[in-house]
Image (cartoon, rainbow, N blue to C red; front, side):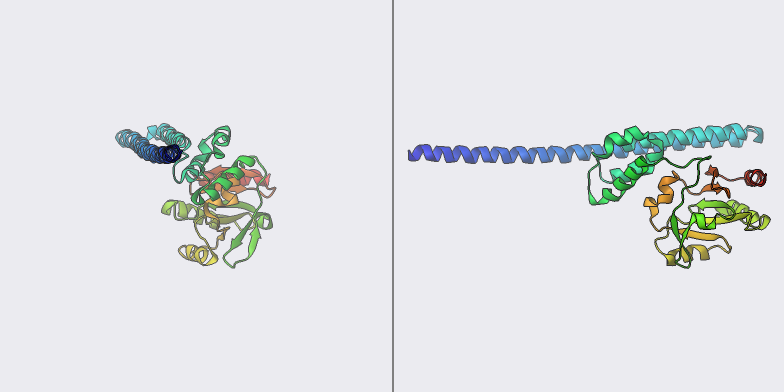
Length: 287
């Protein structure tokens, strides 16, 4: 009886040890697989970036060697190369969403991922602390239609340099030119164009609104404005990636330009801006 009892105890301990070893091996396999996936992810990113860089370099060489008459066509080519790159980045984000910062990558690529594809993976994204805010912002993105040209504007509250809460609708007594992302990303030529527009039009015809997406408080917003000598209307909601402005208007690239007419209609949304576009749109608005 004692021998049988010892045998049972031995078998129990052996089974327990085997189970522990199996769990340990599964953990090792999981870590190994994740490490392998991380390596594949890094390699995929490098390949996509190198491919994009090579294609843009070849295109720039072509533009340099040919006459200026070919540039409009080559502008279309550069847009196609850029879109291909964005699509490849989106594919990588979808494939490796389970890795650390997966929700961040999905959010960055969201505008190039079909919403149905996002819905299929969103509930499987690891609910880690680093992911939670991006998971919520992705769900908000999926729930709402992104504002496009022709749509009524989306109104929301922001904070100005005085710390006052201001809504877009409260300043819609003139056409609004909204510069999402501030002035630092557009270069000197772009800032000169905005300055020329501010001198060409009265504020009652065109109000220039700079939406700062990087500032986290009023002090930083004031510092950003102080870098440029202008009388533009500066505003932010201090939410960075999780800004309702960014999500509802479907914004990722900075700067992005949005014009809202006095009727609250979005008449322009573009990553580039030409003076003629603004003039034509405002001429139409006056009719």
